[in-house]
Image 1 (cartoon, rainbow, N blue to C red):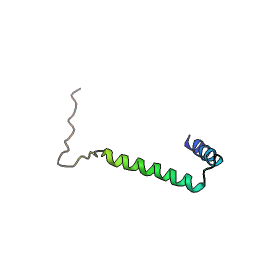
Image 2: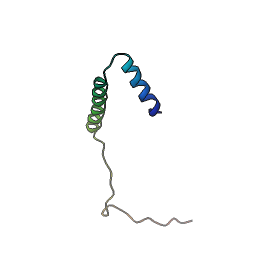
Image 3: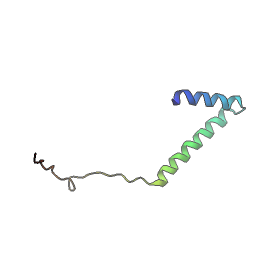
Image 4: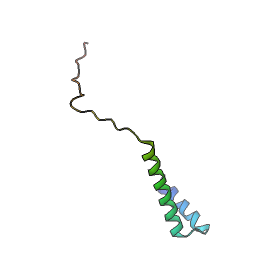
Length: 61
């Protein structure tokens, strides 16, 4: 989907008078802002270490 939408949107913006440089800078700014927002959200990574792992218990069928 993005392979169709991105070039179409870029074409519309270039036809509207945007320069390639403006298009690249704006796109870069959007990606930088998204990255900063992801960092600000913090996302906690969960890992299981050997000290916290438990052996599976057999089910009684």
